[in-house]
Length: 494
Ligand SMILES: [Zn+2]
Image (tube, rainbow, N blue to C red; front, side):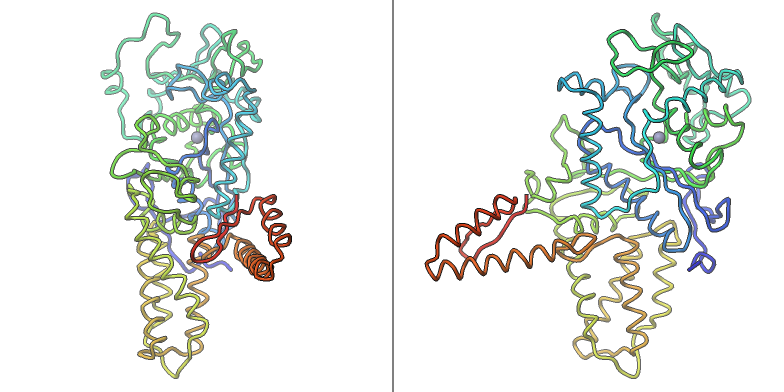
């Protein structure tokens, strides 16, 4: 269904600094690129929030009936430790530290990334390309940029000439920075630097003999600069100009600014119509940081094994917590905030369950059609999920009043209410029911294990300890641990 024809969607476009009516290049189609993770460590909860915002946006576009090509890359080479052009490659550094191949590092943390996103019920992107899989494309873009006079080679490295580019184009238009100010605020280049100006950035870096990730190129063995991969992969799969480019707020400068410069220099056109930036997640009011210990990983949320948590939280409760903030606002995570969100999430799920059994009457107290449009209006206003959730709770209030016999609903309105709640809660916000994954599997597993617990209890009361131990041990061998407590037996799945 082409719902988009009846809805006006406005998006906050970072490059315009305001909300704009969204109009795709080709009617009914959307090309969207989001900068993916650098796979050298376990995915951070803050990164999960960024990707979750774009998952929600992807889901809404799909619901509206757009055909979306969503490209989210994997950075498996070229991202240097200090985010500029110095220091070691993040992946090579980890490989040396752990005495394994760089591609083993990449594989390990790509798997972790996918597993984590699956727990949060993400939809997979349409294409998930890697930087190392697009070295040829990156080399071709560098050649073009050199040919057009916006890059220069020095000692086997190639740099983008920001000063020359800025004479005909505007370097800084996304981040609102001015090149003159940047130049005034930077120190002189060190004597060893090959760059003409400190603002220039690497398109290709010469690999020193000890650098293990290296590829041949017209300028000798080396590796691509980090910014280049996104230009290569977005152009290849979405075209020279595409609809949406997203990423974390921290990528706006220099990463996205450099992407614009590279694309304009090689293709002569602006690459992106709408730039979207998701804001960060803080922990107890402070920036998350591994070095200070003010940090939390997704798995610690699910097991509760982190000093700041009083208990574990399900992926859906965490997802609901994230969706309660607008994607462009900073969100602060704390145990109290999670407890409050979990309560809200359970209340919402309970109402959805109760709705099925509600009696219908001859009139409705809630104007369901108007309420449904309010839900769309919230999402049409730059994907305002917190306002949407407020509307969902308006429905919850009515469901509870109808259940208590204080209000009524017609059969037709009840059907619309049920469909709309399912659409916004599960399809668009991407939540799952209590104890369910996207396929409802955990719920079935829980039922099966509870049946086995019951059979084990029967065996024990019949003094058939051989059978009761067999059930316990075989479940354990499958990674399901039974725990006998005062209130009966519970289980853990590892
Ligand atoms: Zn990128």
